[in-house]
Every structure is written in C-alpha cells, then in structure tokens.
Length: 204
Image (cartoon, rainbow, N blue to C red; front, side, top):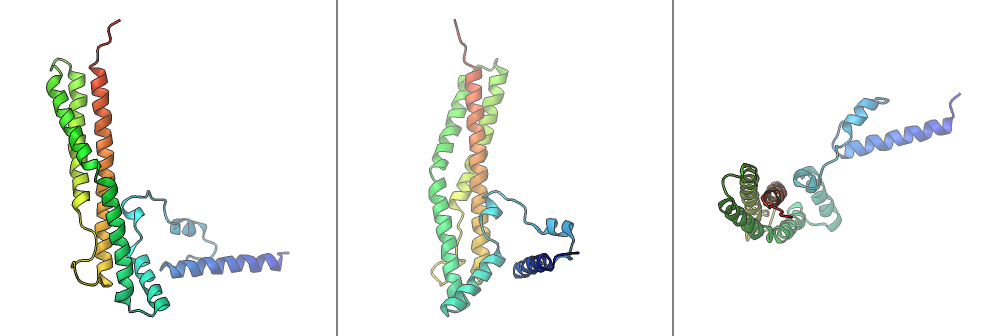
C-alpha cells in the first residue's frame, strides 16, 4: 500500500515542476513521461555567444519585473537593461582590445618566417603558411568584434523595450567574433611555434 505522505510529496514536486515550466513559457509535459522531461531540460552551453547572454524573453521578463517593482514604465525599466548590455559590451571591448595588435604582430612574424625559411623545407613551409592563414582569420574576427557596436539603436535617445532585442543581438555577435578570433589566433601561434621548432637544426 502506498504511503499517502510520499504521494503528497511527489504531487507537490510535480506541481512545482509544472509551475516552473509555465513561468519559463514552456508547455507542461505529460505526467510520468521521463523522456519528455529529459527533452525539456536545457542543454549545457559554453559561456560564449548565445550562451553568454540571456534570451530576449528573459530580458523582457526582467523589464516587466523592474517596472512592477519600481513603478516605472516599461521603457524606463528597459533603459536599465539596455545600459547593462552596453556595459557588458564595453567590458568585452576592453578585454579583447589588446589581442588585435598582438594578432597583427603574429601575422607580421609569420610573414617574415615564410621569407626567412628556405623553400626546400616543405613541412616548415606548410606550418608557417597555415599560421599566417589562421592569424589573419583571427585578426579579422577580433577586429570585427572590437568595432561592432552593441547598444541602443539611436545614440542620444533614451532606450526603449524595442532596443533590447537589437542590443542583445549585437552583443551576441560581439561575443562570438571575439571567441572565434581568439581561438584562431591561438591556433596560428601554435602552428608558428611548431613550424619554427621544426626548422631548428640541433647539432651535437
């Protein structure tokens, strides 16, 4: 015979689960369907791009909560959220700014290494040529992320609710470009080091 206390506990946990899903805007799964519940669980994402910035639905819900808590209009509450997105974009620019000239130096060193190495060493030429390719690609992504604007659509005017989607989309692009640029530049640096070490002759 089932314990009524445990049944009440289970039903209470199911009610909390359904309430959380309804607040998140998801359709409630069928009771007892473990497969549906596992599909509803959010997948783990890395802290870059889409995974680094809250969704538009979450940001809009936060605007509504701020509006109810402070008594301000939704446009006034949206200004707080948009300013936070702008601050995050400025912080990302500060962190990635030193990587742009560093990657430029990497491109220059890789070009000099190609000219310095004799053409008879095919393996070294391949590594250094790949280093140039990845360094240039990383430089392009980092430069795009550095100068990509993320904020209100019209500078000088107070932000509104409609500016949230625009600012978030630009911030996601900025994150993605910075991540890809740093990754490609790191690969280029590793290939350059391998190419240089492969061309060193050790005499005993």
